[in-house]
Amino acid sequence: MDGGWALILSAVVTAVGGVMVALLARVRKENKEDHAVVATMLQHVFGSVSRVEVKVDKVSDGLESHIKEHKK
Image 1 (cartoon, helix red, strand yellow):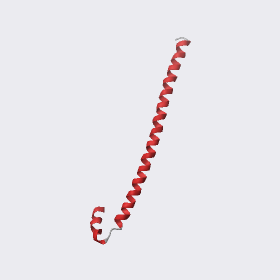
Image 2 (cartoon, one colour):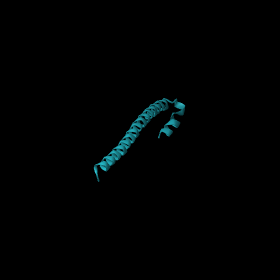
Image 3 (cartoon, helix red, strand yellow):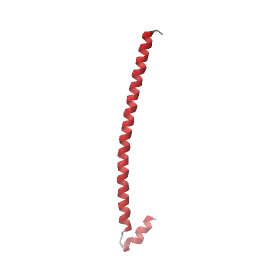
Image 4 (cartoon, helix red, strand yellow):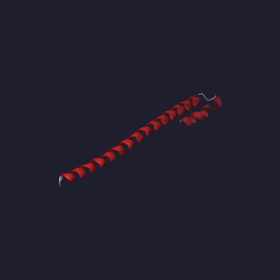
């Protein structure tokens, strides 16, 4: 292989590698953004569940035994 072909081959390898690195970086960025969205949603769900638990604990005497059975 002479110098010309080696230069062309190295340019092709560099270009393909650059494209692959760019695609991987983009995928990682999207993954981080998706993770942040899911984490926020989970915090919201946790807060909602905590509020429901407090409401269930404060139910009036008439429904207390019925609610306790559901909690089990």
